[in-house]
Length: 344
Image (cartoon, rainbow, N blue to C red; front, side, top):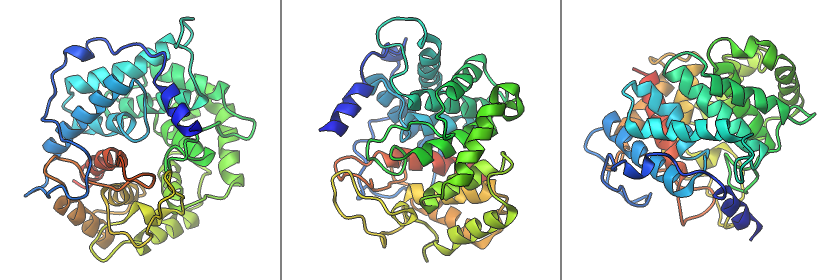
């Protein structure tokens, strides 16, 4: 019940997205995320974009919140396609509104959790990096505010809904912030605004053991832009850990990247088959770490992604948490776009 109440609170007090109600769907309703959806005859980034445009705007308009599994990775990925959609502008405007109105003093404007501040700043900064290449003033404003709610440990009080792997523990919040700060345009990581907070963040990541390979992959990604997070030897070992876990069919499975208990307490099978999020994240992180497209693991991963897109444009991933909704499919599809673009 506590977790359901937390989720309900996320939806309160948020202004409606201006103009969103007038936007017509850019694609047919893809229906529920399901494992038995037929595969596409050939892979298509255009179909992937249409799927993401639809689910990201629908989520933002109906739920009125930013989530690590849907509209956050959407903005991370949509920008690399370079053809800005109306939905992309509207979803971006939602995050900008939150940053603009936090101190306005009206009911529902104040950030509900520290997590919201981190997510808003990182999402806007990564979208800036993929689009204009310049840090927007609202992105900087949100990133600067992020340091004000940082804990003494160097991490943040992350929203713990018992929804692994993203909304589950403080370590993910810390490494998520590290990715955003490192990739923020304009040398933000070296700015005076970030200096003290980044030093504390580095300290936290150095003192605390990485809890699983999923988080370690994100740390490897962050380490490409931020010094002092991983030694060269640690990066090589992590790359080997990732490639050693690749399945014979060329993919990876999310469930094999950590040891989590599901929200509904149903058993997660570590021997589960390859899925969209596990495969796409690993391919993308390997590419960010400098592994070439000619590498056998990367080539096999790309082949798996090209062969496993569904008719709707998505790549399916089973939830670690419940069989009622598989929203991690949205993040998996966003990372599939990032991975395939990184391998062009």
